[in-house]
Length: 152
Image (cartoon, rainbow, N blue to C red):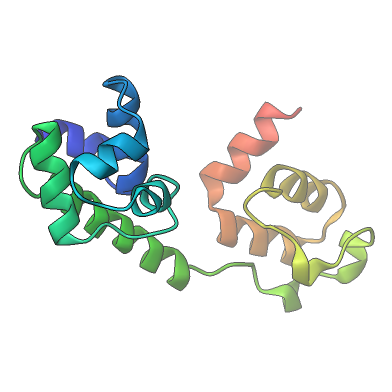
């Protein structure tokens, strides 16, 4: 069980529940009613819109024959990941990047993670040393090197 938890920790427990129900060919609504829960509750959890609570986790684990605490362990790891994401720096120091470098978009609204490949390539093709240094600092040398070598 510990190996499996290490593999899936950080994933919302509802997604794992969804997988367990699908694997067992159990409809969410019928499963919810079988454990005296509202189907909307199970659907909201499996969609990641609602957290797993201890009482519900125990009911689900018992019904599915899973180890007690399995879903709560996953919930805690998911909550930790959510908190870590909140504290991570979301963008490089924009004062070190000239807006003209990103003339075709609003630099304050860029998704720095999803667009990192294009951003890195643009800065290293057209940027000055200060901009290149900031991008290296923000993404890390390995990520920049990987992006530059895979898109040559």
